[in-house]
Amino acid sequence: MSISALILLLAILAAFGFFIGRQKIHLQYKLQSDKPRITTLPKYFGYVAGLAALIPALLVLLILEVAETPWINHQISQEINTGLSVSEVQSSSDLDLFLNDIKNATTDREVAALTDEKKVIHEHYQRIVNTAQWGKTAVVLSLSVLLGLLALKRINIDTRARVLFEKTLEWILLAAASIAIMTTVGIVLSVLFESVRFFGDVPVVDFMFGTEWSPQTAIRADQVGSSAAFGAVPLFVGTMLISVIALFVSVPLGLMSAIYLSEYASRSVRAVAKPVLEILAGIPTVVYGFFAALTVAPFIRDMGESIGMSVASESALAAGLVMGIMIIPFVSSLADDVMSAVPQSLREGSLGLGATRSETIVKVLIPAALPGIVGGVLLAASRAIGETMIVVMAAGLAANLTANPLEAVTTVTVQIVTLLTGDQEFDSTKTLAAFALGLMLFITTLILNMIALYVVRKYREQYE
Image 1 (cartoon, rainbow, N blue to C red):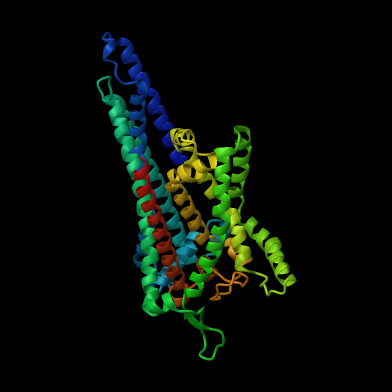
Image 2: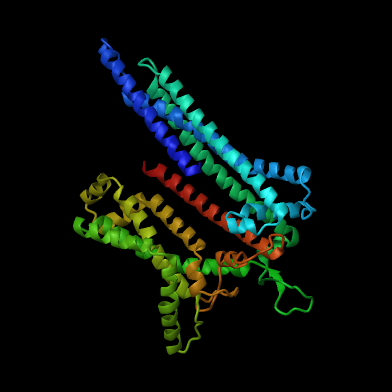
């Protein structure tokens, strides 16, 4: 039985347990003469019975799924090494290739193309897979039915069903949060380990302060253009240049839009303007990239040439402008929400003391909403630093160390994509450089988030 069918069957059993459990308590309540003792709704008893049939079975299913593939591989490997004489297997790498050929043969035509030795192993492999599938299905369904019946038998009107349900829900939420944290830790550790391998070949100082980025590794000693220089300063400067341009566009426009929507717009105008503005956030970044490459970049180049300036066809200015337009909804929406959440008493107090509406906005509203505004701006900055598609299409791939926004530059994320595109060897310095760049990007965004948390906590205490 497939996993999806098995999970669907578990859900049906849980729903059945919920229905039976609720009906059982309904009947007991009706037969009970002491009505004031009824303190828990019948649905909570149903929840307890349903969760008893569902949660342990799902956990066992997860464990069996994780253990299934290693167990099958072990069984097949033992069969190859001890029970059959396979001439093609001479080493562990040969064994992996041998097993892959067997596993990938899923149709009759593919099975017929196997050698006689592989056909024998393939038949044995299919038997083991079928045994594992049926065993897994039997164990999971039996556990679900057994625990569901046990729960139905033991629950009664004296059972603290609501407490049990809330406690179970708490553990489920804790498990979800733990999975998210462990996933994050796993990602960071994987990037960190690969980065350490990179810094074993390239000194940290050369990477952090080097001014030349040319990750192509030379195959021959006399090969031209393969200097393998890993100075990341041009990438950091390009990233900062485009991000600053984007923030110069998005922050003022976003804040002014938020002030208008929050303080000046009528209800009907706000109901139309805010969704329209937020549509910008739903446009795919590749569309912004087309807009930047086909419209904005040529316009900037033609404007520059008309006044005698030299402007590259792909420039940081074009990418930054379009990226700023893309980020406006983030700043606007967050700032509008925090401004609307400012207590009305602050506005009325300011207006009552004789301040104008604009003075109230500048001296009362914005300072009161500053933590949320700063959080929105830093979120926009993180989005700008991590954006890739627009930079690829509008700013180019050249790692130029320049502060001129009219020249082509590249960013950290674009180089990560470039380094990991296609078939790569993960033991080469060129490929490992992507992990070092990713680590630097992670540290940068972490610092931005820490600054945001500091600002939010500091000013929240002031206005509470």
